[in-house]
Image (cartoon, rainbow, N blue to C red):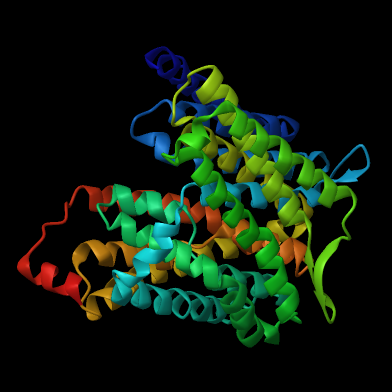
Length: 440
């Protein structure tokens, strides 16, 4: 580990060199070199951050900048490969990310709502009121064109993302509450997100309520349920899930079933009116369950490897998937981004800041303890950007609508890391009042 960190430390010199190269090329007018130098600069900085104890929390955001730079300089590289439109990768990548989220959850995370109903209710109300309404106000004040405005409302209408759980942990918040809030808000998103989009964003573009609902079920809910099943396979103490024969059977059966559905079943699992529930979520979910079962067979049973191998692999897969999704979206909206990019960055900062402030102080007004207030602030202020991007591209069929999620997402990680670090230096001290508030 130390050797790897020492090696990554040398990339700060590569970063400095590339930064100087960018400055020199701009001053000398050799703009053809600016793009490659900029990509190398962000890439080397991201690698350096990965090996730094403090800056590693910002590595993901810097990687996003590297991919955005690459997609701005070489947009064709993220448009088509061998005649295949790379846009078709967005939904499968999001499904894989949501599957990963599911593997970190258990049924107990959903059941915990009955143990702390008031904090979950407060967070739920704030999540689906503060952020979509703030998004609508920002979209109107900034005067964004209809599709971009709809994207701003969309990111505010989505549930919390998994990054909020990490930020809550770093900030000394209530992690159990954070996981429960994320789980519950995601579970109701097939109804709440289309409802809010229909009522708020319907003035900008046409919203197909059922189409969006089925899209969320296919892209988010089905993979998460598959992830919950995989969680059982990975972490159950039942001896059956440690036997090679059982894992092999699960792996083979689910992969064969996924192939059968993929090649034989009709494209729509269920159709109502002009909206249909696609089969690809079920195919990806079953396929990933099979892959997880076989991977556990090889790593844990045959090689006697570490039990937490999935926890190490998932962050890397999720980070790579989100970076590539953002790059695909950026390449398709390059011209729009050149025009409104700076305004969208300003909108992202305001939207996120309002979420943190109102989330925290309205939670205080609801008499939640300090730890829970910090948790609600993150849950309200940080949305599932991947989900918003997928809905914009796959349901709304609009690359401009996906611009806001592509910009808001990275900023939320930056601001969340800063806020979590600041709160980490101010540990929560439990008082008698806090204990009373917890019981409410």
